[in-house]
Image 1 (cartoon, one colour):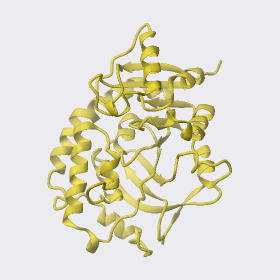
Image 2: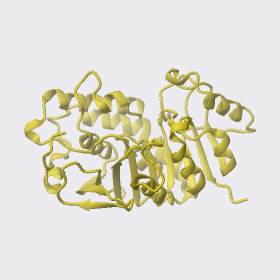
Image 3: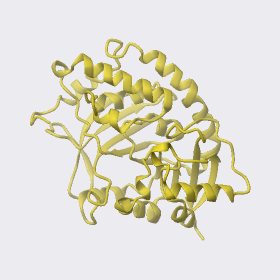
Length: 319
């Protein structure tokens, strides 16, 4: 990254406005996404997630996926997304036609399947999309309006604070008005969620610990929390979160079921082929087979797989 200041927040807000020039296909893909994903998610969540009373939602491994959290938690006042992509936005003069095309292609894939591929976000074997642009597209899928954008820095005390000038900001804050008129603050914070990044007493660990007063959303998380080198984050969630909504790629079912009362929705017979040998996936299959009843899930969520989708909704076990 060049050591130059990013655009002023007011300029960034203008740059992030959805442009037909940059992605002519966006109106059509947005309409398709809303029909396939948003409409059934909103209706289902109103019936099955309202009991969580999630005013704040923390979404680790989110990538640029703001829209899923907005669909599932329509009453939330604050969404906090955390992932490993830097949120800088290129100056208009530096934007290449190939970059705009890549961003539109990336959103087209998301609109069809409901998740981002890490290789697309990182620009592997291609150009790297502007991550801030993907965040803006994701908000636009909800028909919400962005009134303000601020840069964020993650301080040594574990707090994120707005900053006017930044060379390499740690995040972005969007002040948003939902389609239903509700105000919403969306924070995206870049940090390393592995054990190397979440060392006890460090700023990232302190930050993530402070966020665990919100309901945790885990989706398309590459089964990372089931690995030993992500144990610090798994422990924070298991010890502190009041509720968890996750697909099969989140917490391992055994510690999850000990800490939370779980309601299961959908179906799960096998992981995505990339994780066909997942021991945690096999434990989840056995767990679901032992459940007397699993409620239906009227939409797909998470990685594409022939076995369908599953959501596990956990509320903190108070016993």
